[in-house]
Image 1 (cartoon, one colour):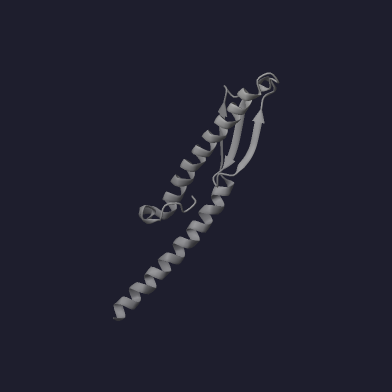
Image 2 (cartoon, rainbow, N blue to C red):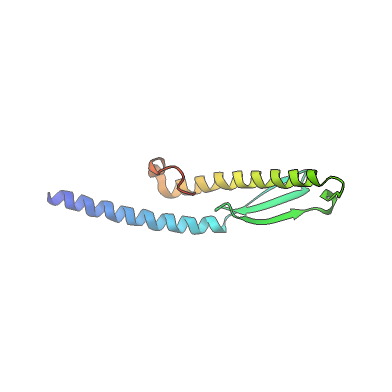
Length: 111
């Protein structure tokens, strides 16, 4: 029984350390910036590792009042690609923090 209490204390200590590491990693995700372009660089979108939109840059040549739909498509494509890249980067970053326990985390943890 005495050994079981020691194991429990050790597990609690590990859980607290992991929680601190994950909180730090979440802060690091906010500082991470990922960009993607579409239309040969006509539209560039930047997001952070928490998948929050940071900026949208549109080159003047991409603006054609007769073809707004094309510009909308370029913005959409760049945004989706930036979000995809940010999601991958966030997953890789969090996997480094959680190590072998990353496979045991419930889906949808928001990384």
